[in-house]
Amino acid sequence: AAPDPGYAKGCGKGCAKGCGKPSGPNLPRERPDVELRLGTVVEWRGKFGWLKPSATIDHPLATRHGGKVYVSAQDVKQGGILGVGLTVGQSVQFKIYADASGLGAEQCEVVGATPPPISASAQLSKDFAREMEELARLAEGAPSIPAPP
Image 1 (tube, rainbow, N blue to C red):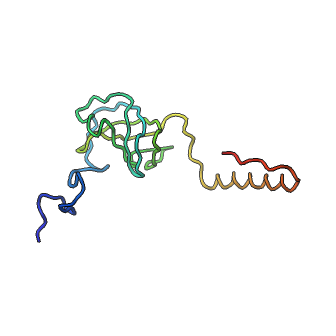
Image 2: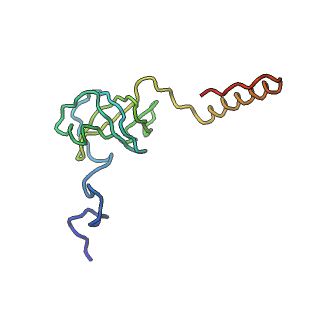
């Protein structure tokens, strides 16, 4: 049977809400300005999420998605590396773009007192050193000390 022309490729009559509508981080973008904005991460789903801008954005699409701004991991940078994730509650700075789905954030970076991520090998080295100190204390008969949080 021929596919129903009312549905996007790969969709059937039981498809999810919004099926066939454009979405995702690779739609053509329009940049209404170059203003750097602030906001808070209100949702993160692994590869994308939503930001709540700190100030109202004056744009016709600003009320879509409950006033939230879409952000893809590919638009998040940390320490010059693109494609990193975010955590709910983090403060971010970003520039906006508009596409067929609404407003999105690009050049998004965490702001504030967020410590840089520690590498796995550096963490293992710290853990090893702490374990060795503990073993030395126990060997000398000194009481055990609690591990730092």
